[in-house]
Image (cartoon, rainbow, N blue to C red; front, side, top):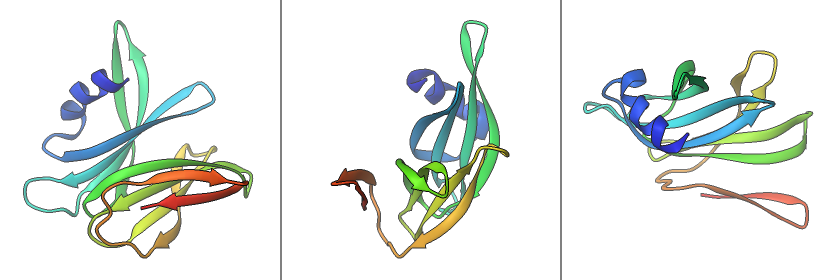
Length: 138
């Protein structure tokens, strides 16, 4: 998905600059969340949730959801098996303004905002577990 998705991003989103993207799966369905950073005029650009499918010998990306972000630099997908029966939390790391967490709705196949994290100047995100507790480094 990596090299093919980078080539196809221009066709899907035009002039928006993306800082990072993360791949995840829901069953056999493949998705990509892309951190929208800059469009040449503003940092207030949407990040995208894209579905990834095979198209002949290539890959097809389809926009499933636009997520309001402010200079998003990273997305992190954190496994959390006990959170309201969801199995992961998504974190959008915004360089300008607070970062936000989202849960995955398996019925709508979209992200739903869950909480706000008081961060400024995030350059990357990482989730990790220690003794069964989830931590997020920003």
